[in-house]
Amino acid sequence: MTPEISFMLIKVAIVLTGLLAVVPIMLFVERRGSALIQNRLGPNRMGPFGMFQAACDVLKFIFKEDSTPTHVNKFYYTIAPWLVVIPAFMTFAVIPFAGSLSMDGNHFNFQVANLDVGVLYCFAIASLGVYGIIMAGWASNNKYSLLGSLRSSAQMISYELTLGLSIVGLMMIFQSVRLGDIAAAQGETLFTVAGFNVPKWGIFIQPVGFLLFLISVFAETNRLPFDLPEGESELIAGYHLEYGSMKFALFMMGEFINMSVASALIATLFFGGWQLLPGLAWVVQQVANITQVDVLLVTVLFQGVSFVIKVAFFMWFFVWVRWTLPRFRFDQLMNLGWKVLFPLGLVNLFVTGILIYKGVL
Amino acid sequence: MLAQRKPGILNRFYLIEIVRGLWITLRNFLFHEKVTLQFPEQRRDYSPRYRGQHYIKTVNEVENCTACMLCPTVCPAECIHIVAGEREDKEKYPIKFEIDILRCCFCGMCEEACPKDAIKLSNIYEMSQEHREVYTKDFLLEQRGNKK
Image 1 (cartoon, rainbow over the protein chains, first blue to last red):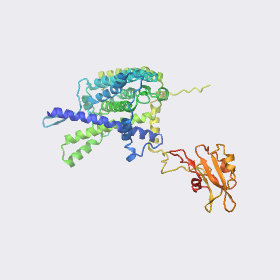
Image 2: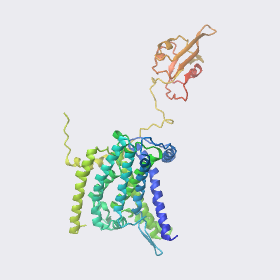
Image 3: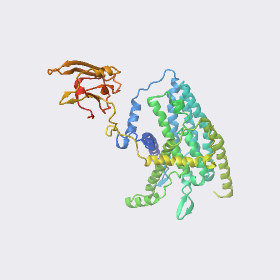
Image 4: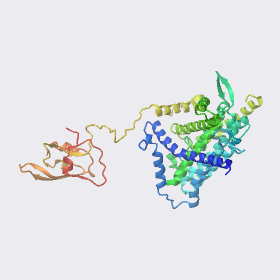
């Protein structure tokens, strides 16, 4: 086995296990986080701080009876959860989780696939996820499920526009759609304030783009305040109403993995991706001095750590927002998408174009 | 008539309000006192008037009850069943005193009706059982109550 292939397999293993590990962690964070925000304590009996509660939940899902209602279309009913989960996993392929490393003539790129289409691939695969939801709603043969999936498709189509539009400005500035290039370009210094170098992160050069992206990503992942496809109060559970046991767990998994992919995208596009957090460069030097390991290796390790911290913050932000904001009404959602975010995206693009033409950015 | 609210331009922008909301939830998450009562370790104190599990008061290990039949008479759920008998000192006493706890509605009228201060409702509220329970006299004579 050549080093390239073995390194590739290692990367795939890291990404897959990382994404799978996100699910129980987020189950725990979601349950305890929501409880603490509501001044409750939440599940705190299993293990330290109730950390093994997630494992118990997963075990429960595995051992539950996997029943199929008689009125569903069996083929589509069975295939739908997988169509939600698999694209969610696939999306992470192009996201770089550390910088590149050149050692002994080998070049290591910490990204599963460095595609030329980059972030466009992300959007293409992410929009496949809606097929799973529509299939689930349609195959369930239940009016609430169907309504949920209808809402989901309308919502995803409306917000995908803004999602794409919000990062065009960023692509114009960095002159690339490769996520690796975008992350690397964000290491440059934008300006210096009182001896502190402000990095050229996406949020500093495209603040409006960041806001638009953040809002549309919430709609895209079907999280509150845009969780109309689930709509507990009016649609019971929406598209996964007829699902139980592991099939339902797959939908949950898809949601959490979508969340992590969305967080990773926010981090990569607007918060410097794997670029070291402020202050970590000093830590890297100290660690390299103490342990006598090559500085490049330590840097790559800490880049990975920075990336995970950034992603973790946005994962927490998803949970935080969920327990802060109430759900939108459907017409409000459409108004916001088409009458506010979409024109704002166009204006942002226009202004960015002018600024680039004038040579400001 | 509904009050017409005219939000200012900043409020209509919502983002500032959202950030304030986020701050409120974060404050609750970090600092607010948690109201959860961790049940088996911590227990809520109920008022002394709380009507829970029954017991029959004893004095010198002899029950106060004289089987006067006032409590089964007043009981709206008809859940108290007493068979009266005679002690050697000609005192009337209950041979059998049963409370069908599934029928009991915990109204406390038996406690009010009792002239001998015998039947009482304690503060105990954990009464779940795995089978249908009838409280017998032996069970009721255990002094598990908190009332004087």
